[in-house]
Amino acid sequence: MRDIKNEIRTTISTINSFLKEKDSARESLIKKTRDIIREAGYAITDIHKGDLDSARSRMVRLRAEVTELTNNLRIHPELAYSNLLYNALAEYAEAEVFYAIIINEKLPTPKDLNLHPVPYLQGLLDVVGEIKRYTLTLLRNREIDKAWKYFSIIETIYELSKALEYPDALVPGLRRKVDIARAVTENLRAFLIDIQSRLELIDKLQKLESQE
Image 1 (cartoon, rainbow, N blue to C red):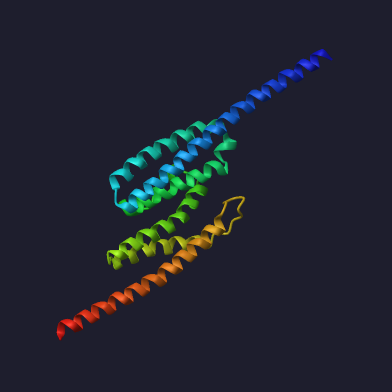
Image 2 (cartoon, one colour):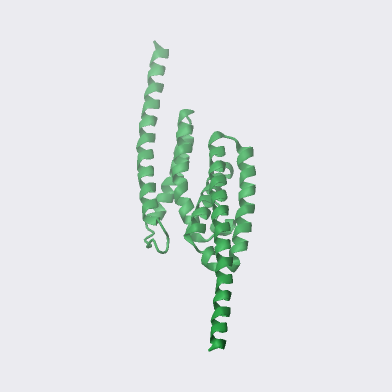
């Protein structure tokens, strides 16, 4: 009987050590994901402000942080595929995609970013809202043609994503994100048409005035 008690003690002690290690890894993950989400948000804000040097520096730091975090989680697969990590990686993907579209006029793939397709897709759908915001800035500068170009990008993202029918267990929030992308796309299209009509009318009126 004494041997069994010792075995129980040893086994529970081993389990306790295992769980302590996992708990420590989880606490570290929580902190680092917060840092990634915050830095991704700052990078997006820098792009909107036109502070591209700052945005570029933030993206360099973000890539290093994400790489370090994902490498450290290789020995913790239950955390590496958790929503906790995916939420942060989705924010990171959003920043990378937004940066690449606005600065480099290209779309990085999940492979380019070394990201799992799920958080990449979540970030790609979220970038629709940021491109709309960027488009509104273009309209304030009366860059209507450029605004339509960026509108076509979010329209393509929505049109191709709306056919994806997967449960939340596989892609958390997919349906909600697609619905939001639809609303953003439809609202921006109507707004662009209205603004373009107004600008064309203003141009016509100005031409008439100049002929008088």
